[in-house]
Length: 277
Image (cartoon, rainbow, N blue to C red):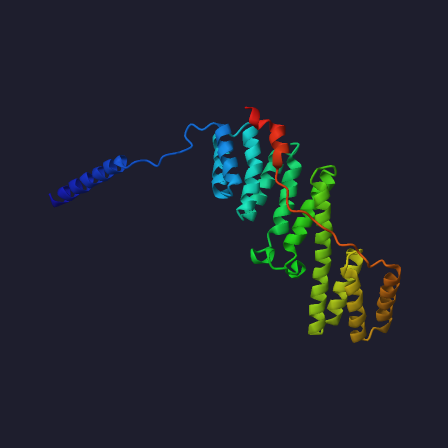
């Protein structure tokens, strides 16, 4: 009898709980009934206001509710840029890769390659280093290499792209950075007395990164390293190459510049004719 009363009490409590839950107001979906154009417009407004989290929500909601058509395709590309501006680098690259995979022949797929390069180009820059000058060549070169490869792929596939000129300039800058990184490592080895390792790093600079400002420093370190090792012939060769290149002006490499990243801009909007629907 006691067990029956307990069971009845539990049953009544369960029914009350379920009925109580049904009385709670459901969270209102503000996007209910939105058209694809409405989704895209609201996401664009959020982007222009710097509210990238909201823009991402609307872009992804657009694709989820309207997976086909021009708006969905545009959202797939724009959400990559929104992720980048929101500081979510991995998601930005994943979104760009997804666009490349789904739309390899789209006229604006070059932007996806360019955006990947931009993300990797900036991903190691902290808030402080954007305002305080630092030597980025002393940082881990992983993202630098990835960025160089992204830009190289863009230039290789789309040499006439509107983004290729800027990509080439950034590649020059990145190549200089990679060469300088090798020199920094070589100097570290010199301080530690690892003269052979230092010399080998400098050989890499001379052979792989010709026509970069770091070549001069690399040759000078090679001379010092070979002297420390007692390798007089190699030291003399390095000194001779250094003197010859200085005489010919071969080590005077002009500085390269690069611009801030470009947004997708009105070109894509006009292409997709989104404002005519």
